Image (cartoon, rainbow, N blue to C red; front, side):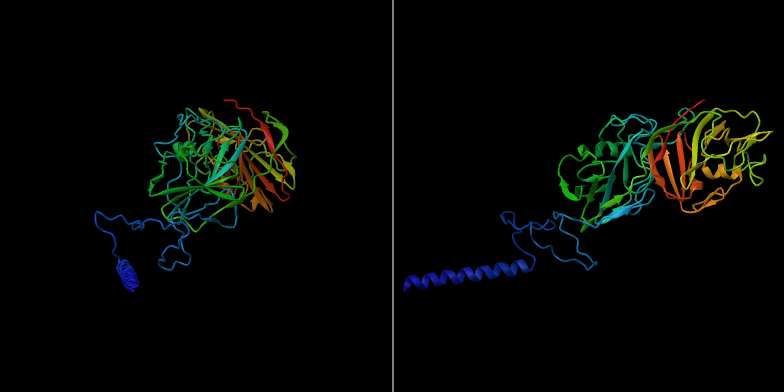
Length: 414
């Protein structure tokens, strides 16, 4: 009888103690002393795996715990030239990134002949940020008239990383950030500080990457997501349509040649340049040609290649700084000084309209492709604003879609 009573007392004492501890925990206390050996998570730490995080303010979607695995959102189409995410950084590499010198064993050269693509997304506390355009792209100078690009670079703010695989090379995330000139670590992504987690999506399978971020190999046609702080509930994934492949037939661009069927008369129209300055470009006789590069324009109407007119910008008394000599589509840029040139200037000197719905009087469904020596993508902006740079080909597809894009053998007389 005595033994049963002692057992009952011990059970009641334990129950009272448990109730007291529960009351204390509910009041926010518990184990604050220096000698505490409590195994409860510290304030701000992630809940144990499988635990349900405490609810915050209702934002329409609960953010997962810091150690939870986000899910992949339904794939959305990614079109070259679009912006994905909110603006955060300035375009181009920073002053400490690639400005033409060798960076992380990568040289800045003329674009390669073959490219693959990866995608990089950056999230800060659930918000997606836009990767800047023109990372790793160096504009022309008098000393380097062709300009240059690094083997990993961007051309827009879509997050698409263009990778030169002409020699079957692979590239790391660290090399891309070195070209960008931004820090990359487990606590800092391009100046955004906090706990960083990385996720890689290849073929629809999302996996957390736990190795050295700088050593992460950029996966061809894969996606890398860097999360700073609170992760999003879902990580975006994309589908993109590559431009048509290049044809195996090589078109040689020979001075004085003709490429395509005759369609427009040679020379300027009555509304084109007559000798006066057009869009800031002068017409002069005997102009110095210390800056001399070439771009190219190809116009296809329902699959038929139309010959670009000769002598656009060439008058009996003077030549404009940008002009044509023949029917090859080669646009000559010959000027004393380095300055930007656009396709709109050429069409204004020619005296023909140029817009997303009208190319020199031809209207219809118009698609524009830009090819920099093999680095090809669809252009979705105003075609008047396309910069003219060395070895750049601009192809207009009007009407029937092209199954292949031209492959060129260039000449570059200086």
